[in-house]
Length: 282
Image (cartoon, rainbow, N blue to C red; front, side):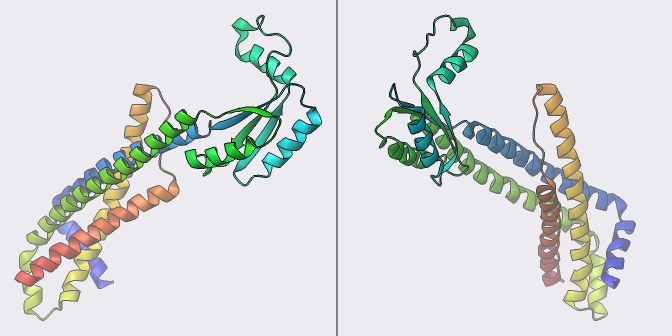
């Protein structure tokens, strides 16, 4: 409790330095938050595209509807399959006339084959899994052809892997820069209280007693900086969304709380390193 009161007193004694520290932490985390927001929206966009991954198995003409329904039920039991829709020739014709209205007079009955439209579960849409499901579907004697956009799926997952690796590398770089800036900012606060630390050492205060108020102060600054960074990131998202005219996703409560806790951790670590170095010199 005494350490907490000492930390609050330090805020009151040097309000400008405290505000500078919080602002610096906030802008460091703001840059990291902007990158995280971009990475989050790229991931969501790729997931939305991934939801369009679909297998379409065309069946031979004259396949009885009962046989089509039986195969549909069997494929629906595959662990990778989310949903199977059996599309008859009449339904395929009607869908083509709706989707390609300008050519509706060209299509004739029996022009399009019946098919099975297969949607896969999340986590089962990678090229290897899709290819494995397609190979099993091709074993049915009534299946004439299977289309699944193999090249498109491969390109999608290549893009997702590249985005994941690049995101992780840039995220670590931003985090490292944030830690360095935060550590330097808190070190300024520690240096401003050099005389106070020296006096405390002279009267017999232990290193742990001296260190605790700084650790609490650094954590508080980190939390306040994290909250401010979150607010700045939110307003930046809104401004960009209005300017570029597209909807963007924001951090959910769990990610927002993790961001604030990350700020507290950075403040704590920065204080611990700065105070530790200074105590070794006093």
